[in-house]
Image 1 (tube, rainbow, N blue to C red):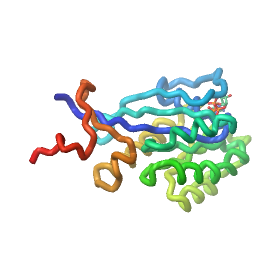
Image 2: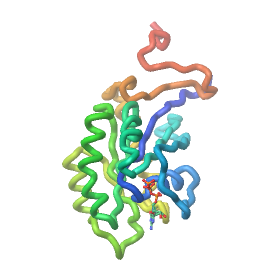
Image 3: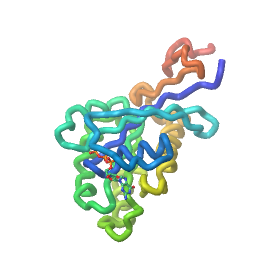
Image 4: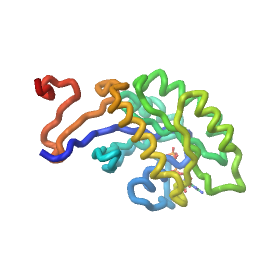
Length: 205
Ligand SMILES: Nc1nc2c(ncn2[C@@H]2O[C@H](COP(=O)(O)OP(=O)(O)OP(=O)(O)O)[C@@H](O)[C@H]2O)c(=O)[nH]1
C-alpha cells in the first residue's frame, strides 16, 4: 500500500472582487486569471501538496462574495479544515467586512478550523488603503494566521495555502484537533481504501 493521502477541505471566503478566484487559479495553475468573472455559488479545484513528507490533497472551495449567495456559501463552512478569509488591500470596505465574515465562520465552522486572513492585491502599492500593520494586529487579536498576497504577481500565494495547511497538519499530528469534526479523511494513494481516524479497523492491537 502506498503512502496515506490526507484529504483536507479548504474554503476561500471574502467580499466580492477581492480576488478569491484569481488566488485559487494562481495556486492551481500558477497563472493569473486575467478574465475573472463573478463566481456563481461555489466552484472547487484540488491539488496535492507535500507537507513535512505527507501527501495532502487540498480540496479548495472558491465561493461567491456577492451577498445574494450567502446562504449557499455558509453551507460549505461545516467540514472545512481551513479557511482563507480574503480582503483587498486597496478596498477598505472589504477589510471592514472581515468581522462579519469571521462571526459567520465562528458560528458555523468547526471550532478547530484554521483561519488565515489574506490581504490580496498587494501589487497595487499606490492604491493601498489598508496597511500591513493594522491587518496583522486584527489577525493577532483574533488568533488568525495572516499574509499579504498578489494573485497577479504570485507573491505569497503558494506560501499562504502551505502555511495554513502546515498549521492544520501540525494540529492533527499533535492530536490537538478532532479529525471527524474537521472532515479530514485519510486514504491510500490508490484511493480505494478509505479509513476514518478512530475506525476500529485502524487499530493494530
Ligand atoms: N492588481 C491585481 N488585481 C487582481 C488581483 N487579484 C484579482 N485581481 C482582479 O480583481 C478582480 C476580481 O477578481 P476575482 O478573482 O474574480 O474576485 P472574487 O473575489 O473571486 O470575486 P467574486 O467571485 O465576485 O466574489 C479581477 O478583475 C481580477 O483581475 C491581484 O492580486 N492584483
